Image (tube, rainbow, N blue to C red; front, side, top):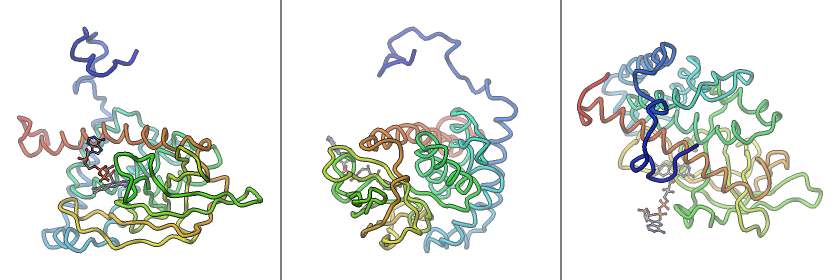
Length: 288
Ligand SMILES: Cc1cc2nc3c(=O)[nH]c(=O)nc-3n(C[C@H](O)[C@H](O)[C@H](O)COP(=O)(O)OP(=O)(O)OC[C@H]3O[C@@H](n4cnc5c(N)ncnc54)[C@H](O)[C@@H]3O)c2cc1C
């Protein structure tokens, strides 16, 4: 029975329900060490000049090549089923991954978008055909993934977004029109999970959109205060044609999908923050 709200503080806890670091298996710890080695070799090993250049100029080719190298180790398919080329690891291992990948600075954001918000909508809500079409490419990083929810007038209140999908009279294609902003990986993504309202719906729907569909333009890379070595852009949809079979789940289910995906991301982000703090001695003890 899941606990509600702050019940973990007020209610009695059964110690069997508590996961402790001592419970990690050999395999999970090996994955953590692999992630750590990857970060040390591929990111810390860049040398100060290249790392600084990555931060300053946002070398998209370098970011993409790191993503592809990480996929060779299986890291882009952590939560993807084995039949689609992934490792099908459990949520706890995802948290350990989040803790370890924080050693990769901005790259943690890039791979986070690929393995979490950019792909989990398909993992959790895709049809077998959608999974077969997109997940192997995402697991191997041949396809780079992003998640397009936020709009200039719709941030925290995401369901108020104005991006619109209009179904063609033959029912085969949606035409997408609208603007998204702060899109991580947007500068090089092949796949955009886009949240839009069909016609005059009250709630969002979700679509798998390929850059190759056309009608997509990108804004300039944002100049950010931190995580500068990650791509963040605006994405504009101008009569972007999306095949009807690329609707994720059912019409009007997009807001639920959006929040469920963000909820898992929030927990993983906390694991990343803890990893970063531990390494920098902010949580008493340096575990790496
Ligand atoms: C680096 C970066 C990467 C991002 N990547 C993505 C991405 O890949 N895909 C994507 O879709 N989005 C992305 N985002 C967008 C992010 O999800 C939004 O910034 C976030 O949802 C907040 O929206 P906002 O910036 O419009 O702030 P607002 O919603 O305008 O909020 C501004 C402030 O007001 C507060 N506030 C808002 N509403 C209320 C309320 N009702 N009561 C009290 N306080 C309130 C908020 O807590 C916040 O402090 C990214 C953002 C950043 C900075």
